[in-house]
Length: 324
Image 1 (cartoon, rainbow, N blue to C red):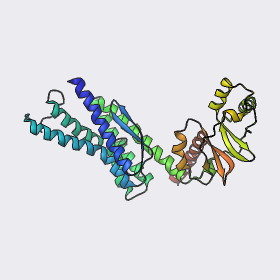
Image 2: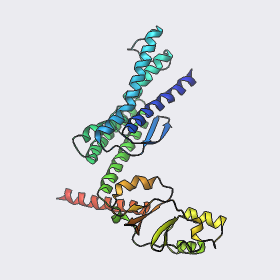
Image 3: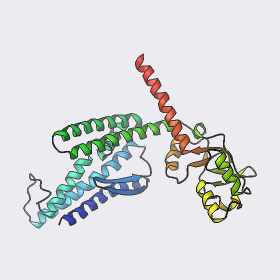
Image 4: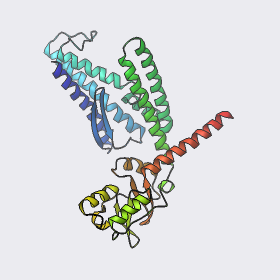
């Protein structure tokens, strides 16, 4: 019975996450994957809905699935004629249908706590987002979540240590969400041309892999645009170079191993639109073009450095404002 209950619990969690995925799909947002964890599940969406109403609907969909399931289990309990007292909560010795009923009620209630990364935190941000911008809504929601985490942690010191684990989970979840909102806000005001590397090396399709190795060792560049008659025809990534050296040798030409299927961006594009895209790529550099001509390289390292410097400048301005 214990094994059956555990399997059913994970199945219920999957249905909860599928609720989020279905709501997101309604708004044409795909779900990359669903990960099951010991304390729940996570549906990783392609992007966070920008419309606060959409985020509200997607966030509510998960707990709504649990409440619907709880209602269905309650109907089954009534139809089965099993004695059931709503005032008594028993997840261990109760009837299996009653256990599933209470499990869904608890999952819905826990996820409605207004703290990231629970659904309640996203619901709170969605409600706040109707009246204010995304960044300020996230900051307030994250602050509420961290306050709740402190309360959980304090109570956990004198009662259940599991509350301390939940407090840490909520605290770091709120911090991560706040940081991601700051990144999104910063990059939304930044174009690719402000981030890209303007000084970089290129290769010709007719260069040998030996030359590519020489350039890699002589510079800090790992990925090279391949140019033929001023036209970008490919990218030689480090993985391609290593594979080519092992399979074809250093005298092979770049043309034989370069990637012809690659992603490029325009210099005028907003950095926010490209950020999530480059994070999921197996390589670290994307060529930047302007009217078809190669003008730069965008790397994960450069984005990270820009955010680091921007954060330092913003902190300095904040301290100067406080001192006044």
